[in-house]
Image 1 (cartoon, rainbow, N blue to C red):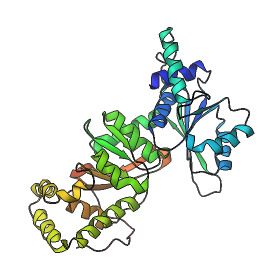
Image 2 (tube, rainbow, N blue to C red; image 1 turned 30 degrees about the horizontal axis):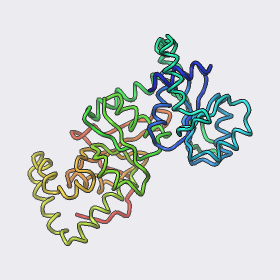
Image 3 (cartoon, rainbow, N blue to C red; image 1 turned 180 degrees about the horizontal axis):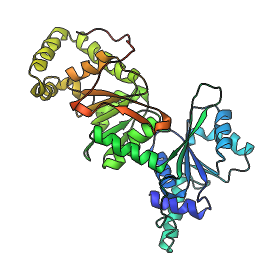
Image 4 (tube, rainbow, N blue to C red; image 1 turned 90 degrees about the vertical axis):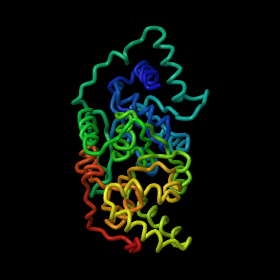
Length: 340
C-alpha cells in the first residue's frame, strides 16, 4: 500500500516536497505517513484538534504542497482550500470517487508500477535529511517547528528497543494522538520495526471496550489514563467487597518474589480479562506517574514503567530498562487513593 501511494505521490510531482497529514488515528493516516517519509518528501503531522486558523498557519509556515486529511475535517479543509491557492493537492482519507483520495492514490500507483515506474522503489534515503517537521507547543504564543531526520527517528527506535523489549506477537493499542512524536515513534513506528501489530482505539471513552476487543499486550499512555485505569480497578474490587482478599493475595505473591508475578496473572485473572487478558506492559510518559500507581499495577500482575522525552529528541530521552530495572519515583502525587 505505501509503495503504491508513494509511487503515485511522486508521479504527481511531490518528490522532495512537504506533505501534511491531519486526522485521527486510523489506517489511512499510517499508510500516508509511511508513504511520504519512506521516499517522497517531508511529512508534516498536524493536530486535528487545532483551530482552523492555526492549522492554516502551520501549513503556511511549513510551506506545504499537499494535505492528506480525514473526512472529519471536511469543513476546516474546505475553508483552508479557499484561502491557500499555493497548496497543490488536498487528498481525503475517505473513499470518494468524486475527489482525490488515498484510495485513488493506491489505484494510480498500481497502474504506474504495472507500467514499469520504479521511481519510488529505487529511491535511496539520505539518513541525515529532514524526514519530519512537527509543530509542538512552546513557551511562546506560536508553536515551535521541530525538524527530525531519518537518523533521529531510526536511532531512537533502535536504542529504545534495546532497553524495553518488544516482540512480533505483541499488539499495541494506539490511544494517544498519532501526530504527537511520543505516540508516532513509540506506538506506531516502533511496533512496525519489531514486526508487531497496532490496534487503533476509537476514543478515550471506548478504551475499556477496545481493550477487550483488541486484546493488546502493550499500552502506551499518559499518567492520567493509567491512573484512571488503576482507580477503576480498585473501585470494582471495593464494589465486590474483595478489597481485603485482594490485598492479602498481593502480599502473598509479593513474598514469593519473581515466581509470584506469574502467579498474579492467574489469581487476578478477572482484572486482566477486563483489559483484554493479555497486557504485559504499560508505559507512561509525557508527565510523571504516581509511584503508587505503577507499583500497584505490578502488584496486580501488569508491569508498569515510565519514560521521559521531548519532541526534539524523537522523543525518548530516558526510559526504564524493562521488567528487570525500573524506577517508580516521581515528583507528583495524584488523587489516587492509598491502597497499601
